[in-house]
Length: 115
Image (cartoon, rainbow, N blue to C red):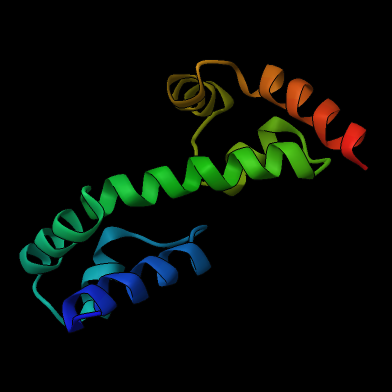
């Protein structure tokens, strides 16, 4: 793995570990590269810019919480920084093609049956 790729991998891990509070600016500062350079590196290695990567990880981790935690959809939305359940539902439905509630119902049944 080349140096720049390892930097992007490390930053991706940093994003996941700090998903509840991380901002693009934090990632750029942590990288030691200019904002423009680190954006280009993310696009080259991950095929998306930093902001899209953060947003994607937030919704993916929120989906995981919807399945495996008893927390309300509202609590999950707030945990991942959405300003309202409506905005969270909009983003979630755009990605998964179903609402968070339906997603929970379908996946929770599958999870419980597998126990």
